[in-house]
Every structure is written in structure tokens, then in C-alpha cells.
Length: 154
Image (tube, rainbow, N blue to C red; front, side, top):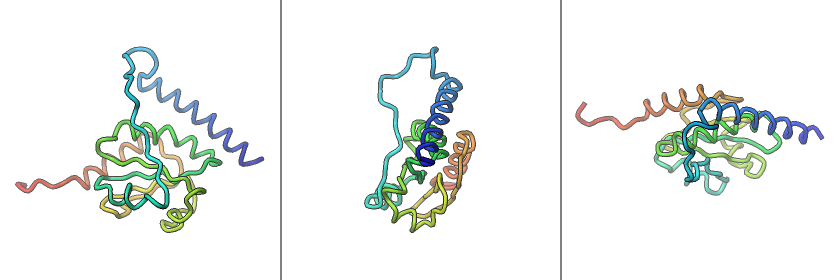
């Protein structure tokens, strides 16, 4: 019963947050909406984590989450918007910790939501708990700047 309540409350909070973010981003009214599907986070598993995340050649942000986790549902719109805004430069992935227990165990996931940032197959940063979209984009921008290819002429 508790898990069902937490899932319900988390989904309701996520819906409210998504609506608020859409209003703040001009998603209701105003400019014409594109008919192209928006980039979404990729769902990874224990089996394809190495290939899709660690060997991607890009900065990767992985959201470790579970269906029953209320805070994970609150965080979900932020992950969706990150995938939409950074799809050309960053791999944004989600891993369900209940369906894929090996990867969270390997990386010592003790609480969710947990975001782990990877570059070059290595963990470069981690955040446990809800991260506001502005904080998330600031962190991604910092990591992209740190791991940008260096010009040979400089």
C-alpha cells in the first residue's frame, strides 16, 4: 500500500512539475509546436549499459530510478527535458534498479533517484536525490566544458 501511495504521489507531483516547466519554457500557446517527436532518454539495462553508456564516446547522464519511487517521478521531467535540450552532445539514460540490479550494485547505488555522470567510461560525478533542472543543466555544462576536446593549436 505504501509503495502504491508513493508512486501515486510521485506521479502527481511530476505531472504538476511538468506542467509548470512547460509554462516556464513557453510550451503552452505562443510559438508553434514541432510535429517531430522530441528526443527522450534511452532506457538501458544491465546487458547494454556498457555499450550505450560507457562506450558512447559522449558525456552520459544516467538516472537510476524505480517505478515505486515518488522522488524519481518528480525528477523524471528534468531528465526528459535534459534529453530534449542536450540530445546532440549528451547521452541521457534511465536504468530501472528493480529490473536491473547488477549495475546499481556495481556502482554502489544506495538511494534513488541517483544521477551518475560518466565520461570516457568512468564516473566523473554523482548526485543523490532530486536535482532541479537549472542545477542539472549547470552541472552538465560544467562537465561538458571540463571534458571538451582540446584544440591542438592552443
